[in-house]
Amino acid sequence: MGDLCARDLLFFVKASAPGKIILFGEHAVVYTRPALAVPVTQVYAEVEVEDSPRAGVWVESADIRLHAELTSLPDDHPVAAAILGVFQLLDISKLPALQVNISSTIPVASGLGSGAAVSVALTRALAGYLDRPLTDAQVNALAFEIEKLHHGTPSGIDNTVITYAQPVFFIKGQPIETFKVGRSFMIVIGDTGIPAPTKESVGDVRTLWLKDKERFEKIFDEIGQISLIARRSIENGEPERLGELMDQNHVLLQKLTVSSPELDNLVQAARRAGASGAKMSGGGRGGNMIALVEKEKAESVAKALVSAGARGTIITEIL
Image 1 (cartoon, rainbow, N blue to C red):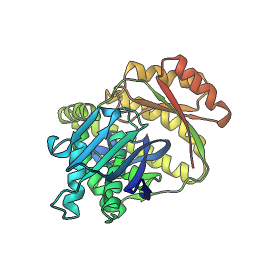
Image 2 (cartoon, rainbow, N blue to C red):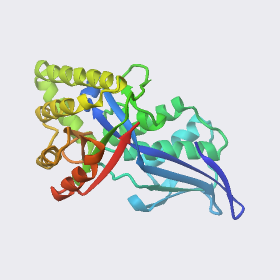
Image 3 (cartoon, one colour):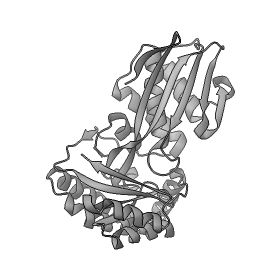
Image 4 (cartoon, rainbow, N blue to C red):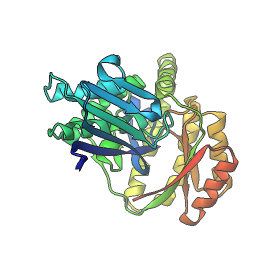
């Protein structure tokens, strides 16, 4: 939640939200199959809301080159929509004079949930500034509405895992389930450096599904089964089983046409360097891949990914 602070007699509230990575189930989750996702705390979005001497709501984000007054932004701009959504939810009609500063270490369009993290942090900071804190369920619902602007037909998994900052087992339209990790494990995230707009890949998969529902429903079923086995393995403290499941899941995502030569190259490089398994993660066609690694091999796998062309890597422990 937001921290209340005093600085030069100005009142401000700061809130942050982590990134996320999907372990299993991307794309199939849009078609009501289960998916698993976990927070990635090494990267995060941070929003500060403070008093402003100027009239209006001013938004500043160097990361996306945004410097504007709220009313100058279109209503469907994700940042504007989030701010207006909070005002509407809290039944505030007269806009206060305030400054909104947004920063993020999460790469944009990479599958790490940058848009959802900004929405969650912004919602919490703004509600905190207005002294009207929202419940996690309210934050999650508003962030999901903003996700529609980013992704068209989102699954809801990004905003859910980021809002609750816990491992999440997610089935669209069903109650949220968080779950416990029986034994911690390490993954290395490799970034292709290629922007991966989820809306496009989700739309392309939908087009293929509409043309051959029987074939693609079978693929979604297989991915869903992998997610179920993965959850059981994680909860039972058997993460070593995840490597083979990652490999299987990646093949199925290739069949959905959402992988890419760059992703396939990094997946293969991770396996050659000693990863137990690897797969693309998120929307695909760019963005990130993940590899399951033993702790002592994490650094060498990360180096191998960079040598194979990864723009950056993150080593994270799933607890």
